[in-house]
Length: 129
Image (cartoon, rainbow, N blue to C red; front, side, top):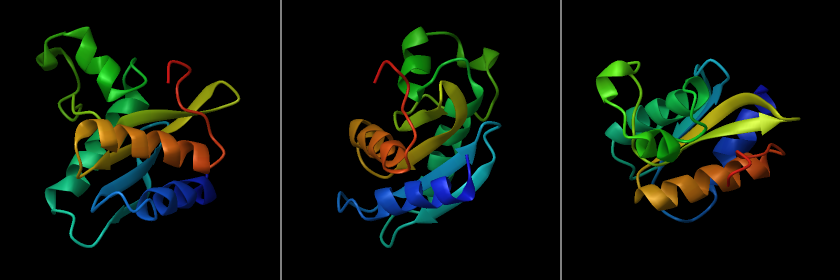
């Protein structure tokens, strides 16, 4: 994920008007490329968004929703992984190039914002979405 794409992701989530959230755009290794905590978003939403992006970038699942649905023991995973909705992998030309994590609203809304932000940056969400 390029810095331009990451900034487009952050801008998309920030300008959605859906509410006070934190958003993190991460590279394919789960490392932060760009992030923002909107005014009014709780402090812990930034860490949650980072963990969501990290999980979607590094796990064999392409969303935190898919990882949670596997129902496997969380202890067998990286301790930074999370099962909260709102982490979505980003693809370009069929290759995973990073992920987005959004936190601060109900999980389903966080996930919708992440998907919209991925598309706004000219990337694709997982084919299942």
